[in-house]
Length: 216
Image 1 (cartoon, rainbow, N blue to C red):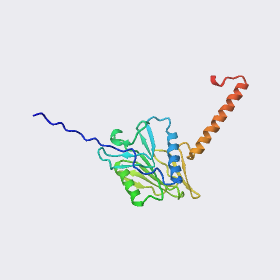
Image 2: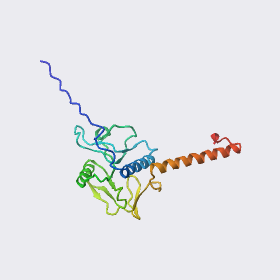
Image 3: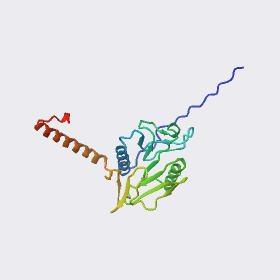
């Protein structure tokens, strides 16, 4: 009698958890700000992947073991489009840095469950920012097998990202590795427009002097 072939069941890992990216504009803007500034910071490094509102599946075959943080950063994995981040397809590399952005609909227990997930599966740093309470931020760093709370976030520098948290005058400011505050998308677009205008003025001036700017 011929042997019966064993079929491996096909497991579907949804790319959408059915939850909105944000509950309000404050939360959305902070997610975008953190993601866009970190994406720019690592734009020249092909092996740093930055994602926002993106599902992480930690264990193959376990669809329910997942989280979709506001922003996460993975060192050692290539920049590429992904429907979701499946750790077993990424050489076993779990995102090293994770950000959650608090909303009024978050519950404390849910946030603790998230932290437990990141702690269990390998995050090195975990941060929570509070858009509606900008004088407050929380952070944890891995020590041994645990994520340990950072006692004072004012002045804390992320070991992985080199970014600094500043809590002054009732406001949270994130300072990038380059020493500049994280900008909003509008501020970044304005900077780009001003740089392009300045370059155009310089090119025009060079042409007045009889110099072709394309040869420089």
